[in-house]
Image (tube, rainbow, N blue to C red; front, top):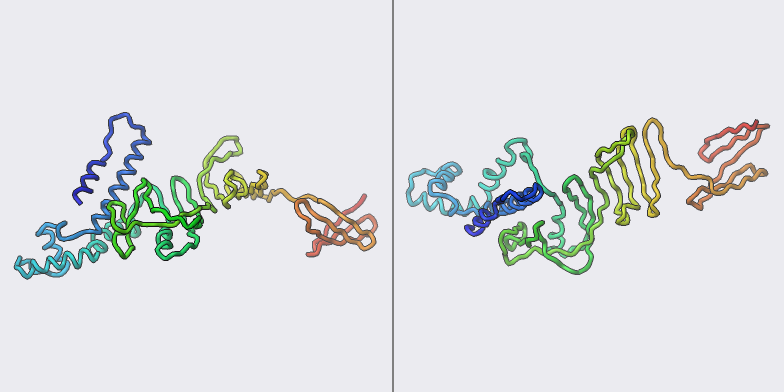
Length: 316
């Protein structure tokens, strides 16, 4: 542990004045990630050597009512207490971590993260030999992605942290990971292909005054990699727009405001049978045939659709 603590000290960012803001932020993020991993390792490996005699005695007296006499019997009690209670997460779960995290807001106090992924099932699937898809959420910068990861091949790879360090299981139970120290149990996962099936992100939008603003946009579908074959939903200044971009880069919009404006299909073919009083027709983009009936009363023609809707046409 002293070696890893030395690494934390040595990794503390130091500036010479030539760094850009982006470089400083990146260095701080990397250092915080390293510090977090070190704290995780430290708290998971608490033992009697982490406490002074007085500190351990106080823990005993508060948690188990030790007599504080300093007798050999009480000192022996220490030895078992530190290994059985601290390492069993009584102090870790109930005092050191949990109470601090839940102290301010009742859930997690002011949690700020650089990135969040929920694809932990990759490691579990590998352990159980499952090649099932992994559906997960990735949150980064100003975007939330809903992703399906499918096993690409029998190939296997190491699970790496965002800065390229391999993860290891902390013990044979394979329930916890660390990237601060190497163990005999590397975390291995299958190689996956990923498809982002939905995103919520900020995007530049045009206002009716010709200026631009940023607003949230919902993007639906994996598409073709060029932004086509996808659906988009976003709020403009005076309407809600639903847009679909076809594989042929054609846009079809439905705008919802005081009225519904949409691109409707046009008539592709029409056969009027005056003897039977029927009309058979098709619309663009489809070979499906539709039918309706009509009646003529002088200069008035009444068309009737199968659902009972009528349209009266007066010829003058």
